[in-house]
Structure formats: structure tokens, C-alpha cells
Length: 355
Image (cartoon, rainbow, N blue to C red):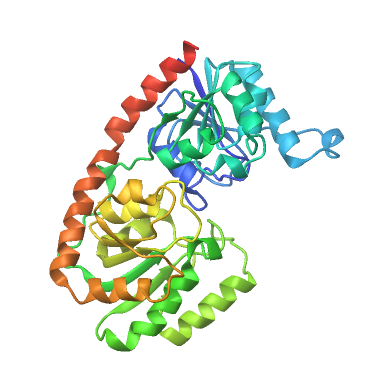
């Protein structure tokens, strides 16, 4: 079975700019899978065989970037003639490509906020053309909202647990935030909470890893400048964007990882990585995060007065609780290991070909 995996146009398939979708595709792609996306500088990630979308004639320059990307995808499809097309996170592209080959759509974000799936009528039409898969049950419910019952499969994100850095036998007294430095991720709530409690937690420090976007060329924004200035005042080390291996190394050392997202995380890969790395986790109780962490984290709403501060003080002051949450997190992470995920993906691909 020749499978062609379609990345979103702005998803970089390279180590220095890979987001969550590229990292997942890299883990799961087999040697015969074709991974299609925008051209990358340097070496693509090793999963599958990377095929860059070819340049489009200047005659098409009057059309949108998305339309020109679709034209490029059609060229690649005509060249390789896949048995199955697997589109990540782009309903409109999946709907269009379904005319040329069996197609399944894997959704990583809220479909009600996506072009081609925002209305019930659009989502209903999608189900007639493509097989829909979501990375969490929360996303599945969002897709099916206001629709008659229908088959939408769930395939959670995964990790290759055997490839993670070895957790430190003695965790550093560090509270770590990892993620994009944007309001939705609650990074400013993390800085606010640490500013409030820092004088009460002698011997501990806070570290912030992230930038406005994934990649070494992430732009400076007013929000990034403001958060980093506040972090300086609070004594929080901010390291900017770091490659994914460096992020995992930091998680393997830190005692606590905070995931204080304001928006409903569709899955919550950072929380899963933190649990698998042996850190105790504090997470926002929204979106798909509760599905990921189960009973292996403390929950705190980022903007509820005192909740994040209280959770931090509770974990910092209770060694036994931290160790218990870390142990439960490592155990829970096992259900998201790469072996079961690969088997699930193969089964879903075979089902898609039988539609």
C-alpha cells in the first residue's frame, strides 16, 4: 500500500522547525510512505520519504497560497499515484483530493475553527467524501456536534518511549514551561504565578522554553517581549526556541512541568512528553488534556485566582506527591507508546481503502 501523507503548508518537516504534526508523522511514517510538504532547507526528518511540493508557475501568482499549494499537491499525486492519501489538519484539502484517491483526514485541532469544517453542513459533507480521524475524543465530539451519529475514529498522538532521554535519577528543583510563547498557551499565567510564589520557594527556579513559533527564525512579537521582560523581573530563565531533543532533555531533568493552556488543547503532547520523561505535571483541565493525563496530574485553571499558584506550592512542598504523580505519569504514558499507535494506524488505513 502506497500512502501519501500531506502536511499543512506551513508545517516544516525538518529538525529545526518541526511542530507537533511533523514530529508525529516522523514517528509513524514507514519507509514506503511518502511525506509531502513545503520544501525545507537542509535535511528532512527521517520518517518516510520526503517529497517537496514543486514550485508553481508565476502565472498562478494571482491565486492564494493555499490554492497554489493544492495545485502542487495534485502534481505530486499524478506523479506517484498513491493508493491512499492521508491529509493532516486541512479539511478543505482533504475534500478536494478525495476526488482523485481514497482519502482520510487526521484532525489535530478544533474542526469548528477550520476552513472547510466550521459548519455542521461542511462537516457532514466531509464525512461523505473522506474518513475522519481525530487525535482525541474531545475533538471527535467537536466534529460531531450538531450532526447525526456517524463514524469518526480516534487515534491519539504517540511517543517512542524507548527513544526518550534517560530520566535523571534525582530531579532538579526546576519548574519548566515548554511551548509557544502566545497567550493561548498560558505562558503569561505561568510567569504571573511564579512571580507570586518565588519568594516562598527557596532553592527552586523556573525555566521557560519557547518562542512565538517553532523554529530558530521565530519572530519577535510584542507579547514575547512583554513576557520575557516580566520573566526577567521574576528571575525566570527564558531560553527561547530550542530543538525538540533539547526540550526532551530538559523535561528529563525538571521536577515539574506546567501546561497552563487557556485554549482547549486538542490533545496535549507536551503533557504526555512530560509524563513520559518522569516529571510531575500541572495541567489545565480543558480540551483533550484530561484525556491525556488522567489521574496523573494536578489540574489548575490558568486564570482562576490562585489556582496555579496553589498547585505549584503544593507540588514544590510535597516530595511524596511529586514522586507519586511522576510514577503515575510514567505508567500512563505507556498507553501512548508507538507500537500500539502504528498498529492502529495500519488498521485505519486498511479500513479507509474498503470505503
